[in-house]
Length: 178
Image (tube, rainbow, N blue to C red; front, side, top):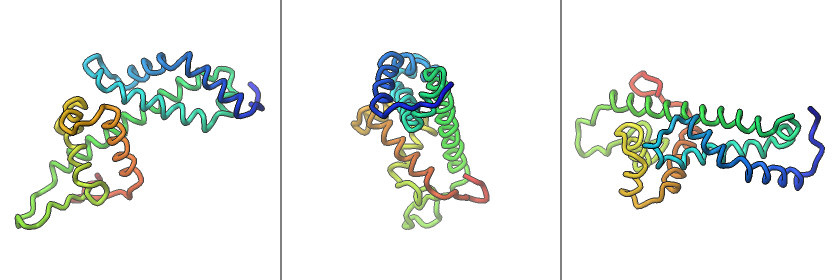
């Protein structure tokens, strides 16, 4: 195992060749890592997002990746951790939204706007979208039909909302860490 001494152009050519050869296998592997079933076929965009995140990381670390004896093996290992990271993030959101649902009490005065703790992080429309997906169990297909979006546009929107939350400070609600 040596140190990569090539140029970015050479790295780009090598990455291109690897992606052309391995992309479909990486997608299938991501589907398996994300535990998606044939019933979840509409969530294929989620697997593609994980693969794209992994490829972005690989490109950022191209010198290290290309210095490995088996750079393709590095990609599959990184894919595993990216998928695990996504599952952990989704689980965190499911728990957070369920806690919110359990602890939230409607205001006694009806003229008071519904101010949610999480609305300070994400707009109400985005919060409602997350509730539909993670709490109410709506499928991407149902939400896409309702909002007149493509699956990839919806996946990008959900990803953007979750990224916004990640950059926000931690919040506390009724003494419970959300």
